[in-house]
Image 1 (tube, rainbow, N blue to C red):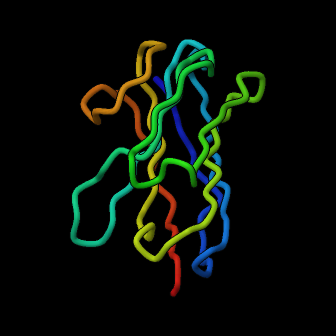
Image 2 (spheres, rainbow, N blue to C red):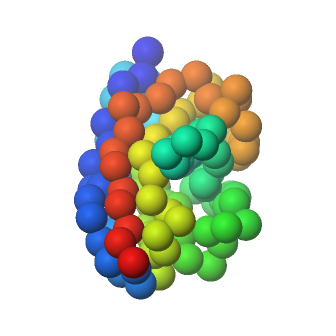
Length: 124
């Protein structure tokens, strides 16, 4: 079992920045690829970014490429999502996810464990 706890969400003005954190426990963290997904009001949950178990490979949704950066600290069992140049359309609940396997994946079905989510609201 893996437990995931997100933090760092909040309210920010357009153009601002936030850094989300996801603390993991319960399984060897470095053997798990991690992902961030988001669900905006009235929309389905969507892929944002993912990082391999080693941290050497990453993947981003086109909508956040160049603005968001995913990283991880395997010593602290934590994955981060640095979000810069935020836009109102980035408003969503952001979820951290972990998969059994080290490779980067973009599909929700590839992830076995999910956090409860953290709200990010970007005002115009």
